[in-house]
Amino acid sequence: QGDTLLFYGSRLYDAPRTLNAYSDTSAYWLSVDNDSTRRSARDTAVAPSPDRTISGFRHTLRLEKDSIYFFGNGGLPSNNSTEEVKGEGWYWRRLFVNQSTSFSFAAANPDTSAVPFGISGRIHSPVQNQATPTHDLEILLNGISVGVVVFNQDKDTIFSIPFSAALLQKGNNSVEIRSRPTAAALNEVLIDWIDVTIKEKLISVSDTLFFSGNEAVPGEVALYQVSGFSNS
Image 1: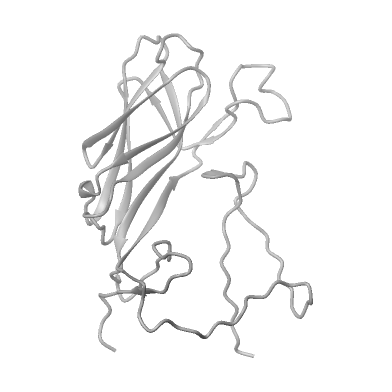
Image 2: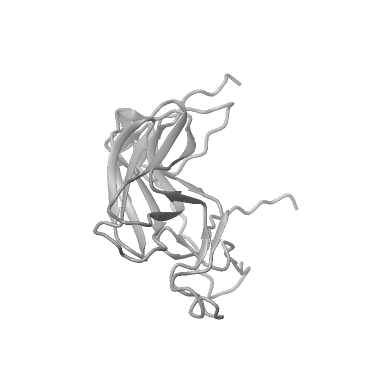
């Protein structure tokens, strides 16, 4: 009584960065006193000094909301069927030519001296190809252009654009997507999600700090330097 078991779980993905189309919930079964259960070995050996010192961590912020349901490309009767059709699913935003939309995210203590990181996203074109390119999207971080995404006709596109960590601000930040004119008569884009990968310093906020150990190297001993906690 009073014992606690903590374990790491993840959401249900069909592919990297692509959530399951029907559920975001993963199910886990825990076995107790089962001879076939895999158990971790006990290791009490500690190196006299760390192999590396770590003061920050990388993580990816997923910006996503199910706001618009798209029935799929091709029109009736192809998208009036039980099976999922091309492009069918939930999206967050819709953009027409000369329109823009912004997504906000917070970075408590960004490491602006870190190596470049990136903005990724999934977008879909629900229109037939009328020009090459059909779509031209400019991506901005905090008002600064970091890249352009061009793509054609009715298909999914996952883009990835690097940016300088120096563009990050402590506190609120913004990703903006602008749809620029092309020769296409109909220029419509559906935005599913946006990922922002950054690095933050190991500094607590209100005496709380959550981070992953992805800066460590397997087989080495790491020393994590954290700060910002009040004296106890």
